[in-house]
Length: 299
Image (cartoon, rainbow, N blue to C red; front, side, top):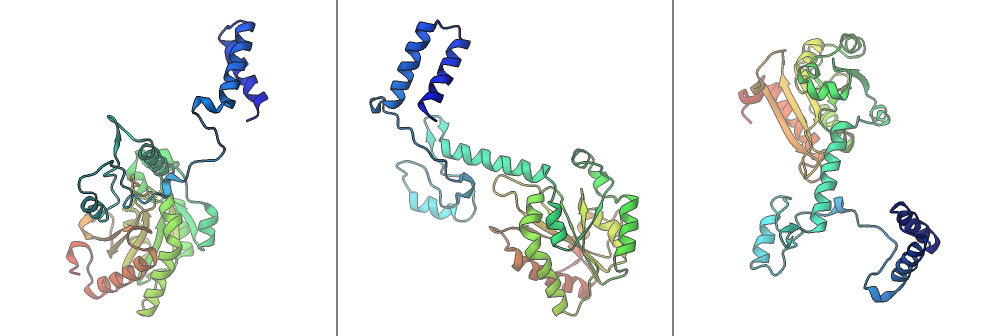
């Protein structure tokens, strides 16, 4: 910001405060001089904050003069929790507050943003939609997120292979960020794993505004032996990119939740996406061998 810009801003503020012209001129000069003077103890410099979202919480320890820093630091390595962040008097320090707000913003974005259509096209997926007509409806009417629209049913019947051994599909769920961050590695890894086992799978696709329960109707439509959905998890303040895979053997509408097998916490700081894909393929094979899933499956 130039000195002229600073003068104009200060003069405008003082004018709005009904300060006289003489007082305004004096105040402007004092403010500009104060900014330029090194005597006021304030250093103004151009630049920006480091990315607070990139801080590794496992390595962050802000307590001053700790009693057992090494032991506490070792405990922090087990989970990226906001512990040992220190305080400024009775309040949190600035950096942890900014990190918290950044994480909260990322979680909100993950919930309210849609999965980018270019990404869906890049993955070679066609799109169908549940009975939810908007994100607001999706968030307030979970029941509509478990049922496909009539158009979606017709599209799946038209474009999907019927009666595959395995039907895999992707759904946004509660985190579009999780889909964008993980599906590109997980889906190919699952397909490769199934091919190595000699297991055939149907045509993958994308379900917009989908809940986990939509897989039951999809199972009935396609007639698949095993149905697997890759879906975004509800984001938290540690990560907004966590995805889960829900898998069920011969799923039917209205079946108990206990019949689902789940692989959760798929993200770069949890279960690595490529490894998760191979693991999911292995679980699908075990489900097919046992003809059971959920609590009926003994892994």
